[in-house]
Image (tube, rainbow, N blue to C red; front, side, top):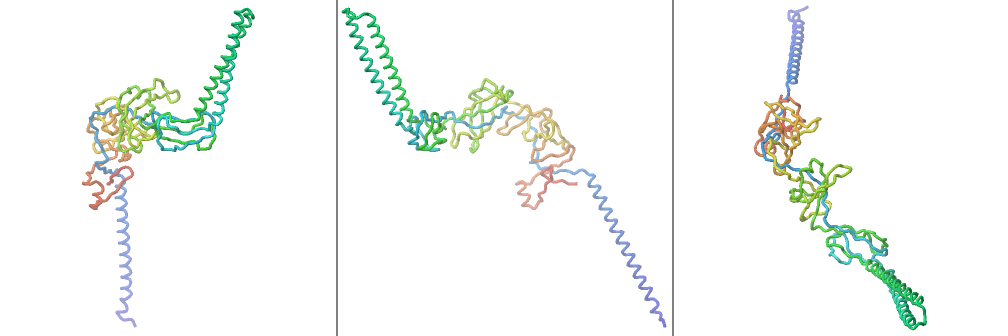
Length: 406
């Protein structure tokens, strides 16, 4: 028999199920509405162009300054005086004790070539000269006797002429023998190899006991007391260069710049490259070696112009251009880089049509699309290191060194 309590239990369960279904439907609708709101916000954020944040280190203003007009030069240093010690006679090398880096004096004996054959040729030539001298003496006595006989009428004048010719031939043979003796002595003297100049040995090409031929190189000597740099310039650049102009060179391996000067200019243009060779006189400095690479600027005059560092000019388009800030927006503007100069030691370029005070983006800011909005932010004292210490985030974008905000 059903009681009243048993009758309302099914209705209670049905109500609970309905209430659970209603709660699930409300929750699903709320979640869907939240997703739609998030998607709408993301779409709006994508439609808004990002604003790049650049630090003061990423920009530089155009300045009206006095620039030193200059021409860039580069090349390898060469010692003004170098020499190659070569064998002047063939033979076996002996007494070669100098090695790379050793000091030599002018006229110092560096090595010898085996002189056995040379000494024998000197003795042979000397004996031949003595024999020729004996023939001259015999011919002279014969001539003197024939002259006396001619005066006495015992022989004809024809015999006297023959004696005279014999004496002349004997004297010629004697002179030829003396010349051969001089050649033999010169060959003997050439077996001793001496240093043609004072300096340092830069290369040793043979060892003792090796047999070398005539003109074989044994040693290379370099005098490090004076250097020269040969630079190839375009004809347009060479037109402004003159002897005596000063040059500041940065030499590979040296911490301090080296002052040099234009010594001379080649009057002819090189056939292949169509370049003009300019020779710089470079004084010696501690640590300077032949072959070190050097580069610098020849100062050719002064220029007053609105200029900026050469590094702000970009070349990833058909024409050079700069990135400038105008009303908080990045703009690309093409420029001419014909007039360049130095401000101190920094290369600068005169920018026509861009007035002084215009803010340009440095190369470190990277490429930013034309029309992109940017905002300059002041860096805290101490730069990025101080920001990291104070807990400020350090983020970057592919196009700038700062951050972007939607």
